[in-house]
Length: 360
Image (tube, rainbow, N blue to C red; front, side, top):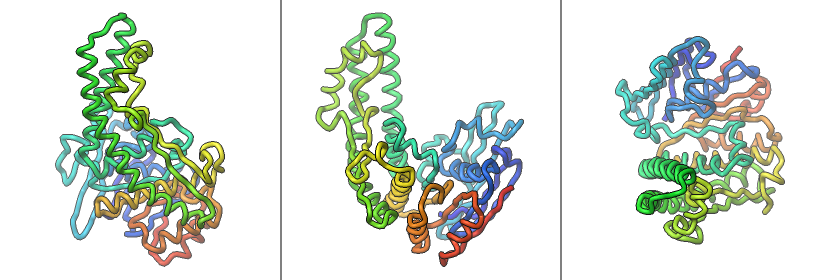
């Protein structure tokens, strides 16, 4: 899938802007604050109907009530027009495909596979388990709509159970039948999610290790370890045995919502022992593996968005990434950088076409 043209109106610092793109590499260059990342965020909206940076209402331009983003895509001579709009006065967001609105936003997920590499991705390493769960769940959801539906239902049931546990803590009593009903719903959705996450990681981790090996020129080793309460116990047993604790806490202490990923560099915890450059290399490999997984599963070439593409990477690691671009490992790429000369010098060594958009 290629994004041929992007139209933006009333979105962040863009009042009315049109971009026509190359099929390969498109670079947005300028100082901090000129809106380079906002363009990537506009493209992200066309894939997911939301921002990777902020809440929808915060994407409105100054004194704007409505923003409008339109993308013209082509793939094997097939044309797709995607429009994402939001009106603050009505608190209404709408996503259109070829002028027809979606009834459910989730029905759009996966049509335009997209991978973004951003400085905020460091939260995947140093943040909470929820950041890491969100990362892997987001990948799986682009290839498996049933997984996304189950995840939505699991989270709705979890919210209901937590709300009831909180009221029980206050009132000092609870209904065993109601708790059991909520437990069965969590088990119904959660058990499948657990096995799908494990199945995904079995395919994904080899992709990740391959890409990290390439970026670091084979000088470092990495690994990912998936931890879940369900590794050692049946979900029903966990919920039954933890009910006393849950009532005391006022929330659900065991389940899929506590799963986590542990990252290792040279057999040490990455978050404690990895340098900033190593952590960025790790994240880049995670995202490149995401790209390869999506391409393999969907038979589509995702869009690749690289925000601050070359920051915090030494020259050797930059060159390894550029080698991947030159070998056509990726389809259409959108990247941002603050240094025009650095970008020209870096991309000057590749044989593929690239376009530079200077923002002021």
